[in-house]
Amino acid sequence: MRAPRNVFLAALSGSLSGCSDRQSALSPHAVDAQHLLSLIWVFVVLLGAIWLIVMIALAFAMLQHRDDNRKSNEGVASTVVSICAGLTGLIVIGLTFVSFAGQREMQRRDAPLLVRIIGHQWWWELRYADDGQNPAIITANELRLPAGRDVVLNLESADVIHSFWAPSLAGKKDMIPGRVNELKIRAPQAGVYRAQCAEFCGLQHAHMGLDVVVETPDRFEAWRIGQAASGRAAQTEEQRFGQDVFFTRACFACHAIRGTRAEGFVGPDLTHFASRMTLAAAVLPRTRGATAGWIADPQQLKPGSHMPLLPLSPRELNALVAYLESLE
Image (tube, rainbow, N blue to C red; front, side, top):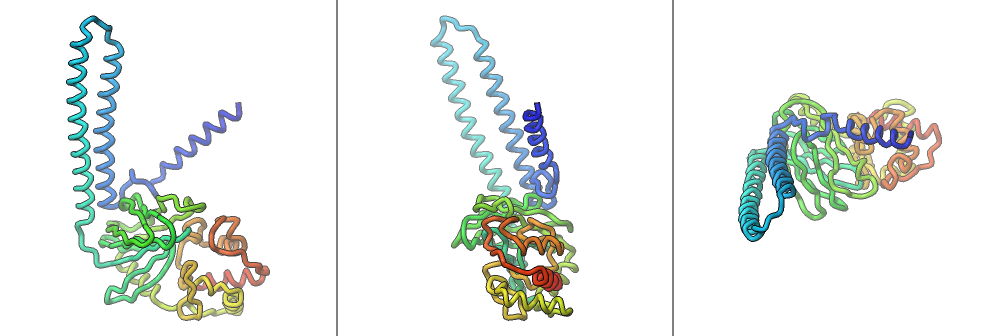
């Protein structure tokens, strides 16, 4: 009896996991997401009605008694099928028009803030363009946006096909190597939303998440000014030893920290690592313990990632974590 019960509980827990509104197209928190939800309901109601009519017609046909007037019945059936085929064509054209009209409405806005998002296996690189008042900045795995402001996302890929999807804020858009796709997004109120790669991109596709942090315009500008600064210098003896570990253990070959000789681009930019809420593309909360666990054995937490296993002593590991946690 345990096996059926376990299967039932597993199915129930999987269903209940979709009740959260943090990553749900059914819980819109932006105008674009509301447009998409309206389209979803138009499709569901209309196609559901068509399905119901077809089922009623099928049941009616199955319950009819056969008679000798078979030719007459075939003529009626042929007429009904022709009418239904014509209606199907009109419905498809109508739904296509509604879909394109909704998409055009979502893209009809000016957006001076430009963010370039590059998908990697399996993390996100974010580059904020110079807007004339603030310099360009580079960060990773966390998209910060000002509330109530239109933003253009230029979506690219560094390796395979990815797909950016923040269901509570906007629709999804593919990220194709060698091509730049554009998505306009606007979040009217502050909050933390979840984005996810929506195109299977390899072993850790399910662990390629992204936090979208929407803040008031003042807080966003303050964050942007802080992100433009160079990495914070080590203050304590432990942090200085951790900085030495960072360079002697060749971490700088894959990661960048502005203001130092670390200029790697294989992995995320760590200049302001401690200002982020998560690490490893939203797999873990950015706590000291989680950071230590990730550095100690990244392949255990995210098999197939490009983060190598470094043989560090406990003292080296603690010092390296202390240095990274100082990079606010």
